[in-house]
Amino acid sequence: MKRIGRREFLAGSLAGASGLLLGSALTGCASKTVTSAKSKTFDPWEIVPLGNTGIKVTRVGFGTGMSGGRHSSNQVRLGKEKFEGLLKEAYDRGCRLFDCADMYGSHPYIIPALKGVPRDKFTIVSKLMIWDPPAEEKEKPLVTIDRFLKELNTDYIDLLLLHCMMAPDWNKTLKPYMDGMSEAKAKGKVRALGVSCHSMDALKVAAEEPWVESVHTRINATGVDMDGTPEEVVPIIRKIHDAGKGVVGMKQIGEGHYRNDRKLREQTADFVFNLGCVNAVVVGFETLDEIKDYESIVRKTRRKNA
Image (cartoon, rainbow, N blue to C red; front, side, top):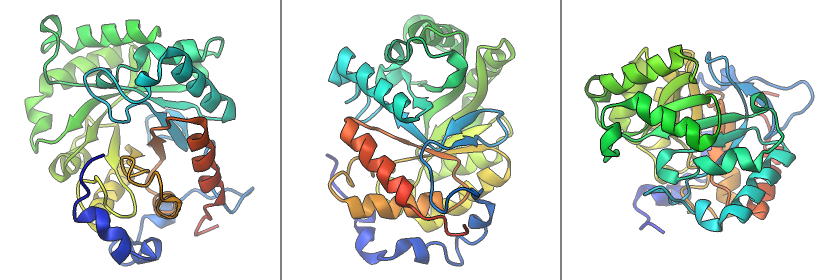
């Protein structure tokens, strides 16, 4: 587990953060929330639109990259039988959004886990890393995407992201990758394009860049493992959302820091879902109990404007 820094201790100073952070700095987001006539609480498996991408996802998705890197993750390290069994359990409970990446090594597990399920009944996200690619793939995104499709055993990826953007000029230096991804979309190999962001500068660029159709952003109630404080990050997310781009929240369990603190998990669910400018979130489930726990938290989270 990573050393917890200053922002990680904001939980103490943000007692009642859901109310405080929805104050003047964040006003305007909540008015965008789509309320359900059927319930005054949130449904983790409700189907929601991902911005203007034309893609619909469940409000909660299965992230496959806990402690991910070097083509592996905690989920992959569970082994084929356990990992695929967990993916199937998630699908059976209602999950329809599965978040993968090349660096997680999780591509080969999704389709086998959902054997027999029509491909259009679930959404696959993947992410393209630009660092240290195989020699035959360097600056050849179409070659990389074809490998992804082969590993995933599918004809298309619903949402493909440039992974882990941090530089303030990524949309200029990575133009060849963006062009290649756009070509893949034109050929029907990808449905929508975007970025996952790991810095404030990169996030600000994503809000302005027309090429971006959806953004994965780190957001929770206390600021742990985020690009800035919630007060700093939320206005940018709101701008992304209001531009019609999809918004997917990451770090709902604070990169594992909330694993043993249900109160913080509940606080973050209340905060993030009631912002109204986060379409969906992805959580790196490692056990069925974790899926059940998060599902119960979301179902008890009240809609502020219901």
